[in-house]
Image (tube, rainbow, N blue to C red; front, side):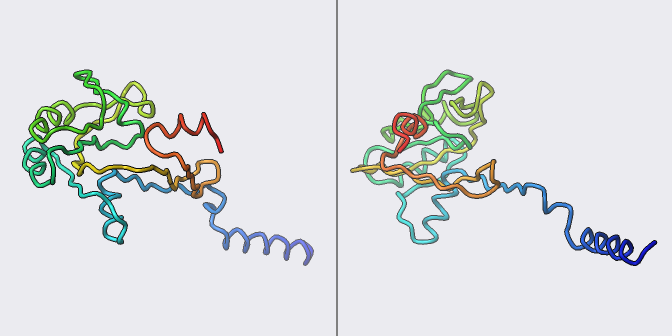
Length: 179
């Protein structure tokens, strides 16, 4: 074996040892937060969020609803999928995973949502189990914006999306006006 080929072989060996095999692999990150978890983080860091509370039972929903000002409260299903407001529950065909209801009807609505399977455009026919509700104060909205930081599967890195027209059905808004 010549000195040049030994040096070349030795260098390749060092290179293999210094570069872990996972460097070429796409890194996967899992940061899936429910809305109530994200709102808690935002609030902890000084971002203004509406008063809200996560509840896990019908009785807890009734008890906590009384702590909100006004006659109505927003009841939101907590599943890791978009389009919750336009979805429906598989077991009872109850329409919508987001409702503004009088406090007196919180038990009725919570009963129809908790422990049921919510089906949306993003969940497919199998849906997602809804074991948590977010109760939130009702607020007046003058205008909405949309902003998200997503993990782009193609690049394996973050992707920021924003729209001057926010709110429900952001996918439909983006299709109609991609700018």
